[in-house]
Image 1: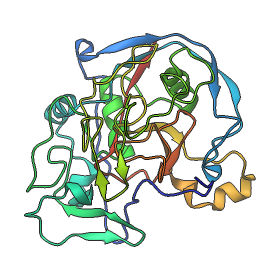
Image 2: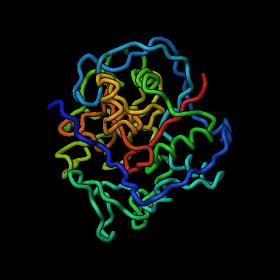
Image 3: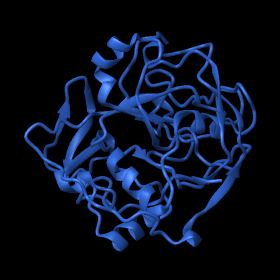
Image 4: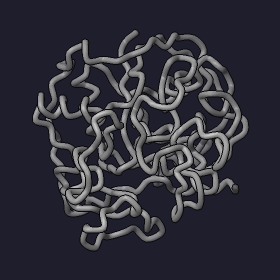
Length: 310
């Protein structure tokens, strides 16, 4: 694989559209609803000395200090997000815009013609796609124990505030994903998943984007609590769904003026990859891998995880 960036996520073009902010009360979620594990503080490793996608800013490997935190064991589920919506009346940006992006193989056959993106034709604009109906109104409802998707960065931040927590920062996320193993490529170590014999996470197997053999058992999302946890007891830190973080998407190797002028200057950072990642196209299910997207964008492979003071 070459080092040139290949886009994993489709950005929303909101020219001519509006999405007003929605006020959400802070810390309203009952503490009993949390399903957390303790991640100790200490020295956090961030990045890698062996970048795969140079333009993403994966290197260098560096150290940061991190405080202990309570982490949700899995990403926020559909059922948890439903409780948030029922308690607050919140409407996601996908609902307010009236559409979101769905992977083309998951668009129901009964769906009318959908619009794609030049160069990313597998992403289709589906009217009515949302957290509750991930494939659109002609598809199946979201499964309670699966990750909530079609949430923008603004939506993710609103949920985290209501829950009494926040989105993690990149160095916190990488520290948690490493599970105490140190400088490793994946949450379980350095052995890479393959299409045939080793599937420790929910990613693509086969020929992307046309044929997914589903050797790992899933064509789309897996339950938020599935596969084996890492050393800190966290599930699906890579694969399944991208996770929004608190940080902007910056490439450290660029000079400040170049960063400000880059396409990612107004984007927010995502970590972990998704069920659509494959080494042949989007090898971003590595701990050091990263990507960005505009904060109002949403899709069927993007979710969130919440952290709380330790």
